Image 1: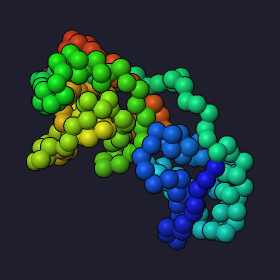
Image 2: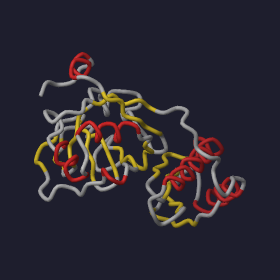
Image 3: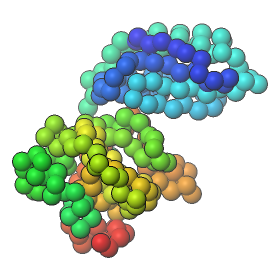
Length: 230
């Protein structure tokens, strides 16, 4: 497995696996993270995957950079150069109500793509997405990649308030706003699920390395599952 390391703080080191967003690279980072967590256990205080890297945080009172790096090297050297071909097991189902009442940019996305609204919904919901990274806001998962025809630039002027659960597209990625916040993604629908809850043992519903598929639901199901009225 190819990678390079850099000390990025007094108690952190960052492993770099590539230089561009790529689904295969996401699988590699996920594989490396799982192996390191399994082998190093409590020596890792935290690990933070991103598009191309994996940050490791350790306890300065119990460990040091050199010994940790030596063990990280040994673990990663035992991993395959390329992960096994991904399968579609363990896909997380996200119900989504696609409608202009909760997705004010749905019609514009369809028009730009030269598709009907139903075709946009079909294409968006039949894709299996990879969680590339968590960022911007707690629990905000960057998912990719959308079908090429659905790729839509961010809004020129971000909205000052986007409701929690809103489903959006920006360029070749899609995401769900876990909390009410400003945002410039093109909104095409909304999920009734609570994507982030600080009181849960795992506050964020999604984490880097997972796979997601959206399932189109009716307004009645959306409301029955706790979705907020338009």
